[in-house]
Amino acid sequence: MLLIKATRDAILKPLQTVAGIVERRHTLPILANILLSKEGDTLSFLATDVEIQITTSASLGGDAESARTTVSARKLLDILRALPDDGEVSISLANRKATINASKSRFSLQTLGAEDFPTVAPAEQVNASFSLPQNRLKHLLHMVHFAMAQQDIRYYLNGMLLVTDGEHVRVVATDGHRLAYCEARIEGADLARQEVIIPRKTVLELQRLLSDTDELVEIDVAANQVRFRFAEVEMLSKLVEGKFPDYQRVIPTGYVRHLDIARDALAASLSRASILTSDKFKGVRLSLSEDGLKIQITNAEQEEAIEEIDATYDGDTLEVGFNVSYLQDVLANLKVENVRIDFGDANSSALITVPGDDSFKYVVMPMRI
Image (tube, rainbow, N blue to C red; front, side, top):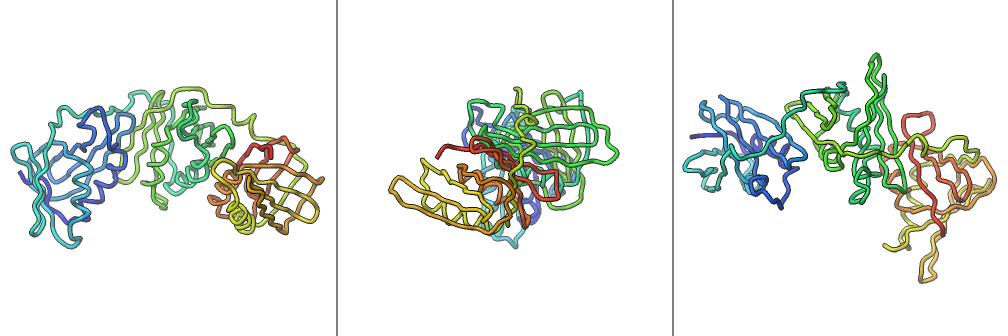
C-alpha cells in the first residue's frame, strides 16, 4: 500500500513537529517509533513518551484506503533529512516493512504493530479553558523558562507553575535560588482559580512549536493533564504533582533602594567580568552608590575584574553578592532598553523589573562573597 507520496519537505514538517519528544532510550522499544494513521488523503503523526503526546496531520497523497503502523522516528527523520530537498518521496507498506523511495535511493524500515502503541487519552473533565495568541503564550514561556530547575530532587520545581484567576494567566518558575514571574490579561475572561505545574520538557517543546503569530492556542486544564491545540497540532501533557512554593511571598515589596540601568551596558559588563569566574564559583559583587554601579569579580588565583557603569541609583550605599549566571540569564531574555533593580540589604534578594511594565518580575537570592 502506498502510504505517502509527496515532497521531502512536506513530509518533514509534520514529522519534525512530533518527533522532538521521542526519547533515544526507552524501556518500551515501540516508544522510539511514531504512530502513522491514514484516513483517506489525511495522514496523522503521533509521538509520545507516555508523559507527553503530540499529534499533527497533513495531506500527503498516497492510496485512499485506511492504514495504521509505527516506524522508527529517528531513522525516518534522518533518512528524509539526508535526501535531496527537491525530489518526490514515496513511502509504502508491505510485509511489516515501510519502504522509502526517492529518486535512486531506497530504504526499508522495520515496522511495529499500531495496536501495541500506547496513546494518552484526553481528560474527560476540564477545570479551566481559555485561549491565547501563540505569540503571547510564547512570550510568557520565554520570560520564565530559564528559571526552571533541571533535575532537582524537589520534583515540583522541575517545571512551570500555571495559574488562572479571573482575567489573569500567570506563569512562574523557580529553582530555589531565583524566581521568574510573568502574567497576561485576557479581557472579559472569568477563569476559575487553578494552579497546575507543567513539566519542564513540555514547556521547552511548546517553545519550539509555537510561532510568532496571532493565531490562537486553545488551552484546557484538567486535574492531572493540560492540552494545547494550535494550527494542526495537539499536545497533551501530564501535570507534575506537588505543591509549588508560594511565589507571592517570595516576591519582595517595599524596597527603598532602586537602580535604573541600561540593560545592554549591564549585560556587557557582566559578560566581560564573568571571564574570571569558574564552574565552582560564579560570585559577583555589586557596589551601589550615587556614582553608579561597580561590578567586581575575584577568583581563587587572586585575579580580579572591575567594571564601572553609569546608572541612576536612589538609596544608601550597598554591597551585595550574586551568582553572575542568574543575572546574565534574565538580561539575555529581556528585550528592553532599561531595567530596574530594587534592593533590600546585603542579605536580601533583589527584584528585577522593567520600568513601566508590571507584568514581569524576577527575584534573585544573594550569595556570600
